[in-house]
Image (cartoon, rainbow, N blue to C red; front, side, top):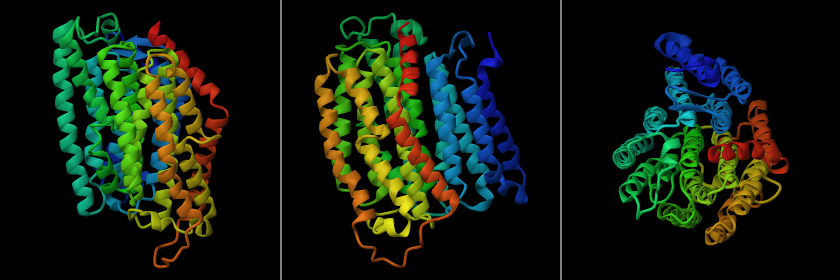
Length: 475
């Protein structure tokens, strides 16, 4: 067994942080409450470790674990997203004080599982890493005080997640029966057409169901709006972002074995069209902000498929880049939601009325997030969609690109309704608590808004890194 710890710097750093949280969660008394004070610097240290490890490359554990440009790119995204999620959750009003260390422990275990998922180059390893990242979320989602909504969201996520897991495992058995290997590199050399290997196509389709569930792609989206609405604002911010990164890195690796025109590739493209259309149309009717963002994530899952079906390194790089900017955009919107709902309530659109007078900085940050999710320049969302469109055009799925453009136009209405309520509607409800105006709140909003704009104005360094990783998959 080849094991080089020098290639596992981000994973070891996250595991050390999880171990400290585990010890602290077992301790009684005030020590377990202090986790939120030292954890943000610890999460920042993990992010720094992921930056240091970016050039690392190698194969570990009988070639089942691959450290390459793609995995290191996503590990950095996971570490950065985890750091922001921890900062967002340090002031969680619906979480009991004695459970804070436990909460952050499971948050860390989930992020660690996503890091392992990024390097999984073999389907069984991939499956185990996916389950490790998922089981932690089963515990996190119900932790919303003693509310019926939190318990309902937890039960739905567990039941639907168990079903998706069973389907994926069943599909894995078909792949093993048809091709006698679970290594992605070996599977890339096999024929995935229906005529040559129908059993393998059925198996891969079933296996992908688990990834589509994490991505909230239609028709595996049904949990998403309910879980977002039922979980706490801070937990929803994590569930809406980092697990999507894990799903995308797996789909990018598996998409490298597919080619435009194959039956399974065309099926993914059709699911993408339906997902983006269904998600946007459902979001139009929502008044609950988190539920709106839930259906929005269904639409964005469809956008990601545009890059996945292109069959090119640029397309896979565009999907990876879009997953990153989606995380940043969504974290920005959820940061504002958590800072406005200081009492932990679910925001409805009317709660945003007059936000520009109550908190100009938060209103501006919400506007940047909404414009980015629409895909307007000069935000990261615009560049992400531009990369998807240019990478996929003239590769057999031009109709999918046109569907993306049309759905982006539909999405303008409900995203800009957030801005309309914040800037044009009068604030008539004076009984609601004032937004958090602390330096912590405003500084985080400004930093995330700046990141969204910088990734839109200067996207080339990250995108070129993603292209290099994508080319290595076809190498």
